[in-house]
Image 1 (tube, rainbow, N blue to C red):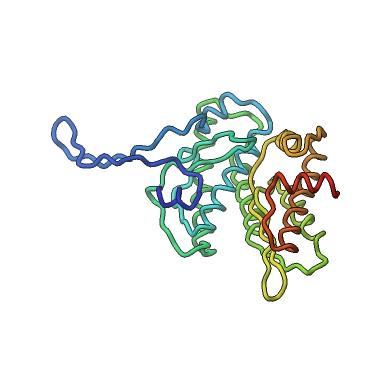
Image 2 (cartoon, rainbow, N blue to C red):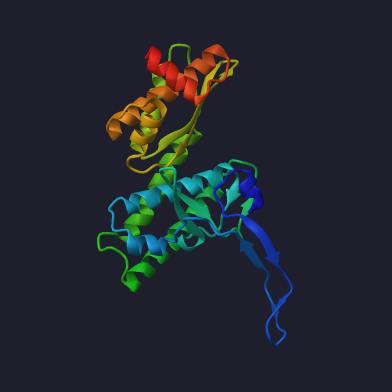
Length: 271
């Protein structure tokens, strides 16, 4: 878990291990991992029981898909993906999933191979379906949620996101519009752009994008913070995308880094 944290994968913080445990009658007990409490985090049972919003399901699915993609990009085979092994937290407008159990994790050279990825997804399908069925048995699952449809949606979102984030586009000197096209495809999948870079290569430039899941209202708040503009959500998303593309292209053409604040100010003045 500490290795995953160093790789910036969303995991809870491991702070200690208790070993050589014994019961009152002297029988040996297994070791126990101690983790720091993740502030403001909630288990899936609480979310389903106390959040009737229709946006909860897609946000949970997207957060779970994003966590698995990030693990697999780092060469991590989870081996026990389930709702019980994840905590969810709203942080800076995003719903993020945090891994809380890495007992079955195996590390491989990144990214994880297709065979292990598909095996991990199959385990996730079975475990997530079982967790949702447990909620139905407990009477806290909304009637409009189908466990089978939910796990199928999780796999579809994972496949779409994996394909989009692992593809590297080759750009020409006049292809700035392709950056906008790539960002819009991510938006259509329900993901925003947390990081965008254009890297110079011998054959031209390569576009790399890291996505993040965001909740409704994030874009208008972020645009107002950067520029002072107060607009509606969809318009704010498009303007933020344009600022991101503007910044990446100027960094590529000038060869100099450009901070987010400077990029927003130049975009306001020049665009």
